[in-house]
Image (cartoon, rainbow, N blue to C red):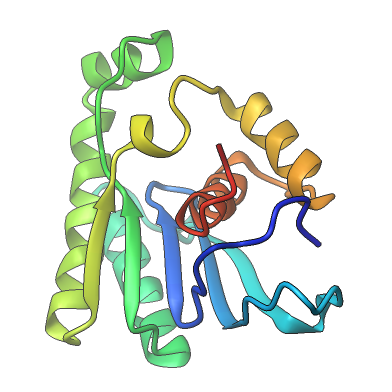
Length: 172
């Protein structure tokens, strides 16, 4: 599956790219064995959370928090790694900051962090620049495809999987 061997097992880890289209990758099983070339040593789930269209305003955030809380109950991760909310020096980040969307994104992340704290699940924040540098969505997708042969339907799911590869030591 990987062009490079992972240097760290990530079983029980959940990686989250928070937002109104939250991307999540959860690793149920991952064993690092340089002598085993099969894909059977990996078992992961990738999904995206979106608020129900019937909700408006804060209700959209509440719906995401509720969905995320249910996922924590279902998957029972021991560690959740979140992409931190940052404003980078690019057009998309600056627009998000000016429109106030960055504040809404931060609220979503805060709700997710609170759910983990209440369930006593370890949390980590990963800065965007630390895992993907200045790569845009298309570049992240290409890097993942080159490393694993996998493609993902949305940039949010791809980012959560890219964070995974970073944690394993094989993304950069």
